[in-house]
Image 1 (cartoon, one colour):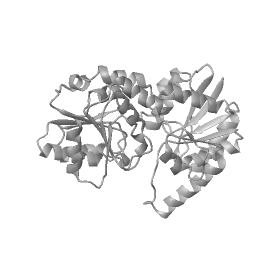
Image 2 (image 1 turned 90 degrees about the vertical axis):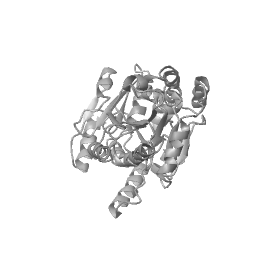
Image 3 (image 1 turned 120 degrees about the horizontal axis):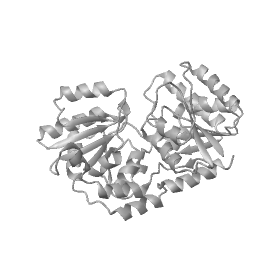
Image 4 (image 1 turned 120 degrees about the vertical axis):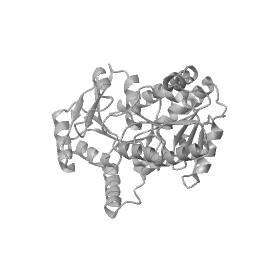
Length: 367
């Protein structure tokens, strides 16, 4: 059995982490096992499931960056069974893979899950990006990305990048989309007259929840009967909560925190909103299209997310709030392609999890 050491942030219910777990659940664990390194002591959402599936978890709680690097080198030298290190930490993958290189790990994979425009940051921020990209180029010897834009961001000079789409169990999501259309109505005591809007993602600046709250205020001012559900947790919880209170939207905007019924919630919603400041290829948009949920997303999101099932509508963050409101109101009447059409469209483009697992196994077997 091969044991692969994945380096991630805390394994919470977020995009990159969810993709890793999708792969982990599907992979033949008699042949390949996933283990994880986390930098910190907080317990992540997926840790119990990782333990159940036989994965090992290592924690490096050092606060100093260099101390973390040396602790990782020590860990890898202590465990020479790790012939493959797979890093998912965007720019800091450079340091992680430098440690793997110094520990003489043969296969060092950098995986790009998103883009991150730091052009507005300080000189030190831009310098950090430049140095990180150089380190990734030098110390990784395999390059994976969820899409073309993420690849271009993290591997601007590389031509041999393996595109591994943010794949899911398309059949399962499509069936949920057909069978749980009344889920939100039943769960929150609503009816079909209520416009049900969902936003799924961490409560952090890049997800732009305050923009969504402005949309909610405009909908209320127009007299629209609606509910907006924010699903996720994060450091901006209190700030977002206070903004909801300030604008007298506590009856219309609900902070649901982490949920295990996200596919069912999507199935019962009318529209998903994603006004992100930037994204790579968010897995939640693959899930929403498989379920059959229309989405209005910012044009800062990669155009690759439109999987040709007529469920993604792009809009500029420079457009007026009223423009976004009108799109949300119009999209409720979208005709959704049937389940089989959605499954086939996503599978043809490589978004079914079984195909991604085969690609990843072939990569790991090349060590």
